[in-house]
Image 1 (cartoon, rainbow, N blue to C red):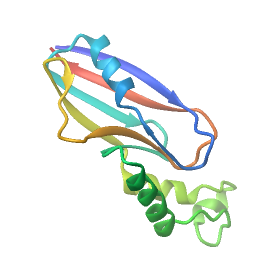
Image 2 (cartoon, rainbow, N blue to C red; image 1 turned 60 degrees about the horizontal axis):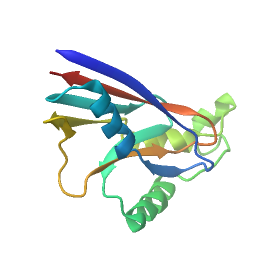
Image 3 (cartoon, rainbow, N blue to C red; image 1 turned 180 degrees about the vertical axis):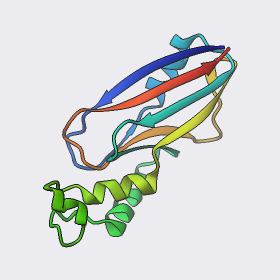
Amino acid sequence: MKSHRATLTFETPTRMAFVNITREVEREVARSGIREGLCLVNAMHITASVFINDDEPGLHEDYARWLEWLAPYDPSPERYHHNRTGEDNGDAHHKRQIMGREVVVAVTDGQLDFGPWEQIFYGEFDGRRPKRVLVKIIGA
């Protein structure tokens, strides 16, 4: 069995953003030389997410509005006890929990084995600084 590890770095100019990272992950699958296996993609920060869905702008806007409704940004320590530590990102931790930490995609014949419309996204909930995403591919 072989393995390949890479990190991708993202810095979004806004607090919340969704970035399609499918091409970057596909590039790492090609670099790995692995033909059959699994590809793990995970956010290495507790205020960011990796998820799979459709690359449709209306859906992404729906996600942003829904997440803000569920866990609105509020830097005060009254809403989020986490903000009592001096940080202002309690909402971002909740948003990450909802959207998830990672995805695993099968690699078949050297390609990500997606269903229709599936794409991999990096979800940022406390942006404006560099954050990493791990890509780990194992197989033969």
